[in-house]
Length: 91
Image (cartoon, rainbow, N blue to C red; front, side, top):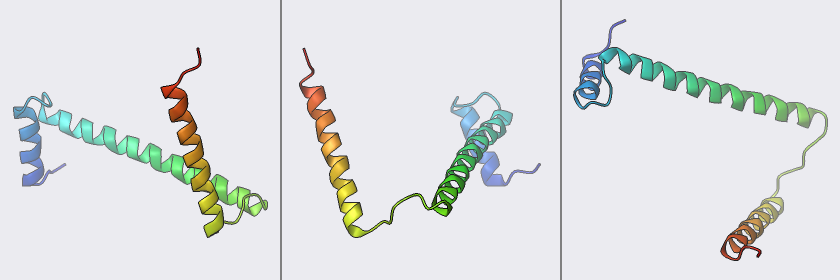
């Protein structure tokens, strides 16, 4: 595998700064981050598949400006209630 000069300099800087021990660790770190990104990607795709299946069964609700306003108000209401509960815990 060949790294570009910029990638090599980036790896060298990580080692020189003490962030990583060896330049090989840069590749391991990159692969680890890529694996995590791919895991998240798969989770998102799975959630989308689930949502599409749910919609195909006729589940769900239409999204309108009014339903979005209601959702926003509901979220604000719950957030304010949580904040108030933290500021005034039951005794």
